[in-house]
Length: 485
Image 1 (tube, one colour):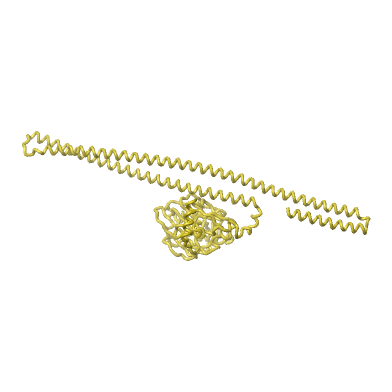
Image 2 (cartoon, rainbow, N blue to C red):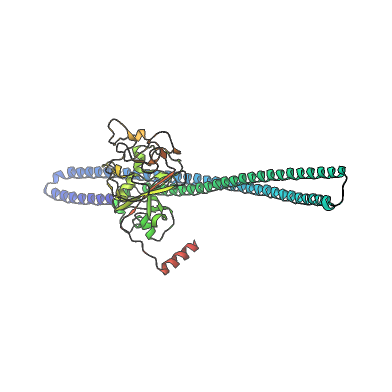
């Protein structure tokens, strides 16, 4: 609008100058007065028509922006409504499952209690009966010095043998009952273990669903803000020091430095990133402060993806995911980072590998594993040095050094494939040992190429760091704030 006003005043000035010229011309040449006035009026009319056309064009753009904003807001509200309904449904299902679990546990406890009561009662009756039998046997031998007629002695011996046989049969029955009870107890223990696993899985699913909801809502808000103010999209330099996003931590180590020591999902903004991203921070392993960029745990996410997916990232940040090569490039070019790889097999065995440095190149450099420091420590062995200085490959873009072959396609994943790999943590999720080599999620130096691992985690942290020790005053303030939430 300022431009329109400026043009209008310029035209007024031009008209004034033209009028003055016409007046001077009129005084000098009276015969040309009418012609000059008409020309001036026509020029002014043309300028006004041009201004009106430009004003209409700007008004149309503003209307388009307002309609797009309204449409996005409607979609956002619809998404939020769907998420709220899904959360309510999931919560109700969780409560139902928890109620069923409680009922099953109560029923099992009642059955065990009844069985124990019956066994105790049978033991008491058996004890009383055995005492009576022993007393009867004793009475038969009280008068051992008195002579018995042979028929009476024979009868007494027969009674004793019969009682002994009954006792033996009773003891065998008790043993069978004890074995049956032990089997029942083992079954109950197994059921309780299964119930505990189900409950834990439900709890994990609930946490992951809440993480996904938070992530989606924040993404919708970011998208709405961008569409509502399209001029900021072309001016990323407006996000400078002093803006809200500029104050976000650059990585999980800076999150930890802000005294946030709980493992979970946080919002960060690397130095060269246009907008914030969500990351999973490991605050427990080896002092914490780790930014996790890869995680496998249950095979719920397919890692056989195209270049675009690996560029921007995919998966559930609260479960299995790949953070994205572009994000990895931005983070590793703002500081010198070390790399840690954590591995776990299906028997509960764990191993790790620590490298002294790690950085990924840009997309123009094919997201090459640009820098990998020396293998520093770990009981899992070195499974990454073979991939140093190797470009990234996916199923649709092949950058490997296998002449005539396609590592990403044959080994089902995206990775820094050489010819092809000494590790393949983004391969197809399989269960432990498998008959085919170099398939699955494996680390050659730990269990070999025939074993597909249960879980993996790749994470980075600044190499040169100093974790501040909070004062007592800060700790007390943090505790007070936490208690007030």
